[in-house]
Structures are given as C-alpha cells and as structure tokens.
Length: 147
Image (cartoon, rainbow, N blue to C red; front, side, top):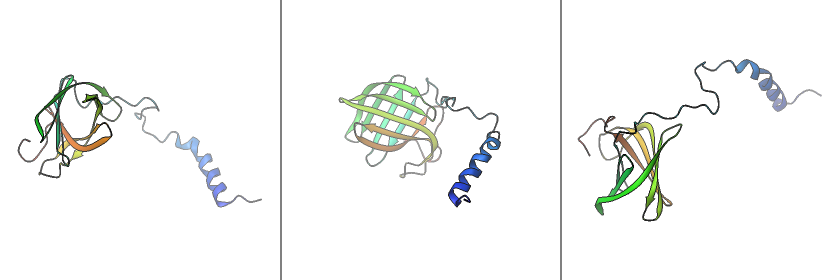
C-alpha cells in the first residue's frame, strides 16, 4: 500500500533528522545548558513602572519599595533575586500576598511618554498582574526626562 501524504511527510522528516542535527551553530547551548541571565548586576538599582494601574518599584539590594499614586511614599518589602534563563525574577511578600516581579530584556514603552526602556517588567501581587517597563542605574531609558 503506498504511503499517504501524512505518513510520507513523517517518513521524510524522520529521514532528514540525522542531517539536521549538525545544522545548529556550534555555540548553541545543549538542552538544559542555557546560560543564566547576567544582564543586570546584583549591585545595580532597578526601577520598574507601570500604567493602568500606575505603580512603581525600586529595587536596591534585597529591598523593593512599592508605590502607587495612593501611596507615594511606598512600602518596603524584603525580596530575593533569581537570575533565570531569560531574565531576572524578584520575589517577596506584600501585605500577606506573594509579590513576583519579572524583568526581561526587550524594548519597552510606557505608553505615556517618548521614553524607551531596555527591559519589560511584569508585576504580580497575588492574582493581580500588571505590565510595565524597567531600567537600571547602569542601563537608562532613552528619550524624555526622568520619571
């Protein structure tokens, strides 16, 4: 019985696999060997901000200060940093709820100014997730005046 279109495509893909194994860049990491993100140093101060709702987070060492328009002075939270494969994770607890902040490389706009930030930020406090942007004292935003 001749192969169907699907089984023929599967047979061809399986026949090509050994040849494709050598097509990757020699510097490509093996699975499970992805380098840890090193774009933000442990000693860098990070500023993250979001709109709708407006929020700010400033991370200095093991302290994150979270503020909103209703709480301009903000609240300090002890956090830990985790350098993952694609960015930096920051975690702590705010008012009994888990606080997670993910900082990942990528051009980001706050949608309110002409600024471009070098990082995207995703803040989760409990079940509420808020997008935003981030920069560091060593990797500033471009355009517009300081926030």
